[in-house]
Image (cartoon, rainbow, N blue to C red; front, side):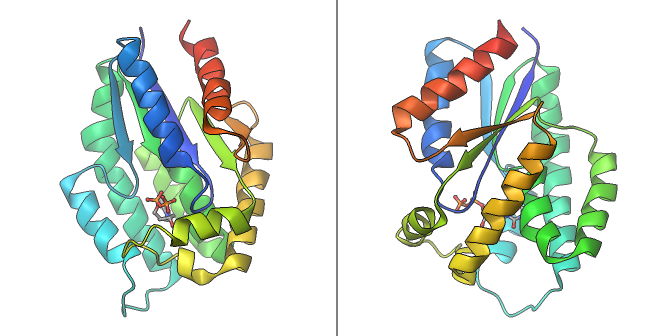
Length: 205
Ligand code: TYD
């Protein structure tokens, strides 16, 4: 089997983590070697960047500076985790990737979007398939805020921000229909999981 790079995207609280857990159990059962990872994060250095990006802070960075930090975290993660795993023919399941930057940062600044796209050329790897878990922002935000972590910077931007995120994710998905599969997140987790597995089976059989 050749390596396969799968990413999951969606607004905060859309149910990605549940789906990633179900998919990981599926691959374990099928004895498929896989790596489960996340962004920002996945390496020691990227996790340090994650901490300063996602906790409420007083740095008052511009969106462009924030973008450079997300891209730095991504570069370390791709170099040390994603590319080596793909080279070893493993499946990579990644919680968020470049589409999150295009949405969370790109929708707030066209300069940030251009910046991220030019840096992304150097990173030079794209998921083979991306699942966008599409959800009603009201339900998703309530779920995200009930988690009680200290990483809720973007959740704290409010419901209108979540509506804008959803629209931007859908716009990107509609531009890249060959890669991004829109999954209705408003169904029970098992139904969602079987739709995801069906799509993956088409790629790995
Ligand atoms: P995540 O851990 O997936 O949070 P959640 O489980 O609540 O969805 O993502 C962390 C946050 O980082 C999330 O609010 C989205 C944000 N983010 C960006 O703003 N830009 C990026 O490039 C990435 C990868 C994440």
